[in-house]
Length: 178
Image (tube, rainbow, N blue to C red; front, side, top):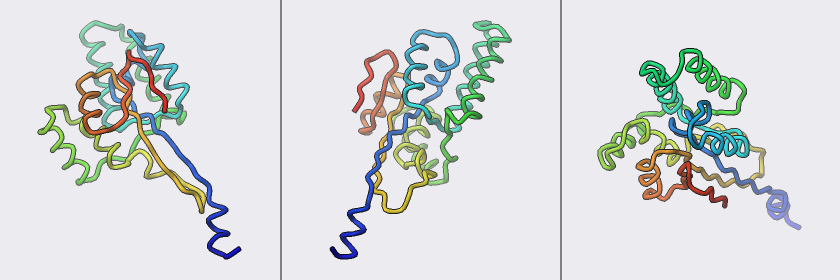
């Protein structure tokens, strides 16, 4: 057996799927709403889950608006915020690195092309540019493949994501595992 074949014989194969939550999914994770139990079960099954920093901030803003408009009590608002931050602190929710200028430019182009908001565009472009798994440490001689699933309750975002040939779970529809 040659040295080259020794190396190839010891290579391991690894496949990881990253489950990327947008703000609508993060809110359902911490607040009792329709499909919240479904989202919580999905998150528990696929832990750790991932999100962009922008999605986390957007989710916190949504919770704030719900409280300000009287749709939730102040203590419930605070409990939801602390719960969301707790997911990050426990490592159950991992945040993607902040975007560099190339990601921001691609996101701005996507905003213009699809008429979606910047936070949604950053989520899509972060998946496309592999920002969720750039920090993954792997052993030597490991062949890797990565995939991502965007988890959202936003139909428009799901349609844009699917048009870009990315996997999506639209909350409220059957989960398709592959």
